[in-house]
Length: 405
Image 1 (cartoon, rainbow, N blue to C red):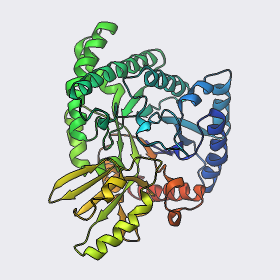
Image 2 (tube, helix red, strand yellow):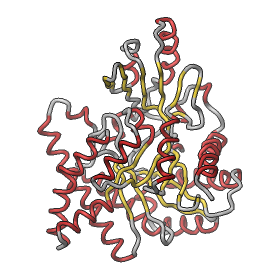
Image 3 (cartoon, rainbow, N blue to C red):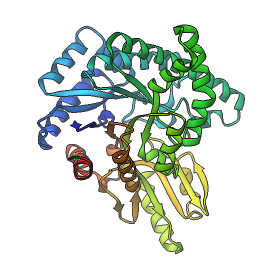
Image 4 (cartoon, rainbow, N blue to C red):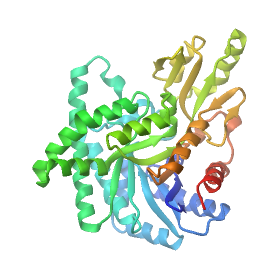
C-alpha cells in the first residue's frame, strides 16, 4: 500500500506453493480479502516471492499478461520480490539448502535475471523495484577453506555484476530503476555491517567497476555510481538484531561509504534475557525447545560480558544455554508481540529503524516478513489471514501516528 512516500507490503513467502498456479491461488485468496479487511481503498502493494519454477511458468505464454490484468482489476501492484529462496520453502527440511544455489552458480544468476524480467513490466510508473537475495553464500560451507572462500566471493561478485548490467539496460530503455538487495543474516557470507562494508569496498566496487568500464565503456567513477544504485542492502530488522547491531551505527556506516538500502524487511527475532536464578534459566530453556524445529535454520547468538558466541542452529545453542546473559535467535516471531510467556522479541529494533526512517528517508520499501506461521508453537498460532492483518495493523498504527501528516 502507498503511504505518502512509502510502499508497505507483506512478503508472500509465508504461503506454501512453488508453482505459479499455487502462488496465484494464494494471492487471489488472501490479498483482496486482506485489503478489504484493512479498509484500504487505494492501490495495494504486493511483496511477491517466486521460486525458480514459478519464474519459468510466469514467463510462459500469457501468464504475465493475465497476472497484470488481475492486478489492474483489483487495484494492486507489485514493487518488490523476494529472490532469496530458490526452491522449496515449506513442508520440508530447508535449513542451509536455502542458500543453494549460491551466487557462484549460473542457476542463481539465471533465476535472478528472470526475476528482473518479471518485475520490470509490473512496476508502476515512478516506482522503483527491489529484489532481495541471499548474502552471496553460506559461511559454514567454507569453515576450513579460506582460499575457496576468496574465490567464491570473486565469482559471486562477477555474477552480481551481470544483474547490474541488465538493470542498467532496463533503466536506459524504460527509465525504470531496479535494485538488488543483498540480505545479511547470521552465518551468511556477509552477515553484519562490517562485513557488508568490507565486501563493497574490497570486492564489489573494484571488481564490478573494472567489469563495467570494460563492457559498458563508462568511466570508473560512473561505474561505481551504477553499482551503488543497483546493488544495495536488504535491511532485515530481525537479522541485524540477532547480530546485536545498533541501527543508528549500521546505517551511519553504510551512508559513509555510499551503500543504500534496497528495502526494509520488518521482522522480529526471539530474545531471551537470562536471570541469575538457575531454576528460572531451566524454565526459559524449556520454553525455547518448541522453537527448535526442523524446517528452517535458527541461528543463535549469545552475549556475555560483551562477548558474542555464535551457534549455527537453536539445537546447538540449547546445549550451552545457561552460560550467557542474553540470547537472540533467528526465529521470525509475530511483530506485534513484544513479550510472550517469559520470552521477548526484538520488536524495539523495528521501532528504532522506523524512527530513523522518519528523520532520514533512506528507503521507501517496507515489507513485513514473518514467514514462520506454520512452524510457530501451537499456542502462538492464529488464523493466517487474521495474523497478517494484525501485523499490518501494528505497523500502520505506528506509521500513521508518527509519519503521516
